[in-house]
Length: 391
Image 1 (cartoon, rainbow, N blue to C red):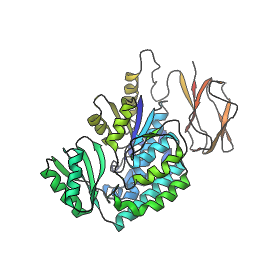
Image 2: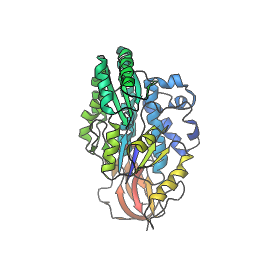
Image 3: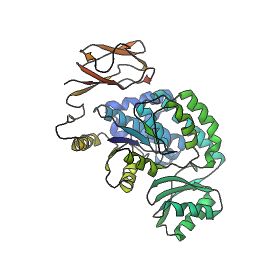
Image 4: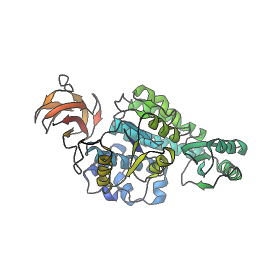
């Protein structure tokens, strides 16, 4: 089975949007800019490292970049069995599965970033990676510091992040080295995320989550909070709120995916940090990082290499040889035809539903396998709506 994973804040890089300018998926940037009221294109193309470090910029650009990669991968006809994301990436995972519509995801991420920025301003903090020390001993170091410092991320074996007040983090890092840590590395962030320092942002975030109203999904998302799979929209109000000031249990998320039978991990978005974490955590993991259009051909080869003998292969940046996606011709709310169910024979030009007032017509003939979009979901142009098998 295949899992899509999505990176969090800290993966952003200056110019990370430049390779995508001529790709069809770049159109998502304009749509995100309109929803957020921000010039996302300028941030992706021209912002320097200091500007991108700002929480409000880091989260929005990483989220949009990851969705560009997802859009490009979806055009290949590849779907995951599960999704997961690290911190901010959890919001990308929810958008990828349809729990959040694109517009709702952009608004929610923007609101989260603003709220966390304000919390960081009122409670100045920092974060540091502790390398080469067991989880329990890192927690001991935080307790022995006797200050405002906590474990914020369980990333991978021997890779833990602590966060809190600058003095508290410095004290805990020094104790961690005494206990055998190989290195304590300060991180370029603007707050103590996933700690009680973020509590002031919680009420504002709760209101934004309620407005987004997450939906049920067919593809489960593994939560950072409990490392369990969730497919019910109503679960995410409490999970996303708790995630704000609780540690990200990423190592446990990876282990949960492995226990569910996932052996293939594809990281979609800037950087490649999660790919390294998967390799460190899961012994037999097959991993790949997709960050630019040049990575798509490698992704095709990677997917084909894991396909069973005789299975359909990917054909370049298109779809499976016998499978096709019907995509949306417009933006709006999707309503499927109530009388058209999986298993139905589809002809070219068949109306399978509507997006707003625009009919969604199939460009292919085949057998309807499943709807990808859900009834009432707000979608964007070219977003996959349904999956057909042509032979």
